[in-house]
Length: 113
Image (tube, rainbow, N blue to C red; front, side):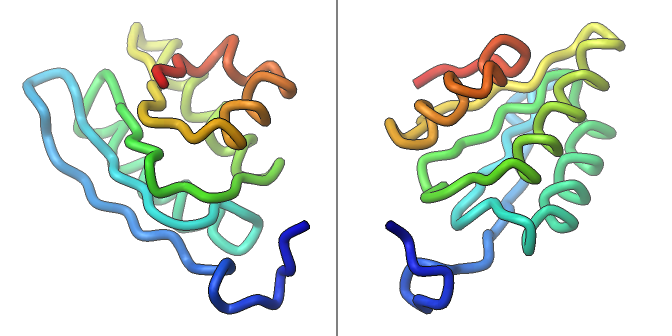
């Protein structure tokens, strides 16, 4: 079980945005997506949504995701879908993929492992 006070495992996420092409914006995320990082995640996704119709999150560096972060991802996916876009997650680790599958988020967010 993860110890929330462990400085080695509890790290603030880093977000790096770059355009892939005229439609796709890649958001590289590294760290834990939890209640402490939801404001940063929401801001990064809001900015990415303004720049691309498809927001692709490279989640290779994501070590943990909680329900608050899942809610932010779901809201972003729904906004993008409403305008014909989509939210994609790539390079998802098996533990994070399991959470996405168990919560049925993978039905709305396109998960590409």
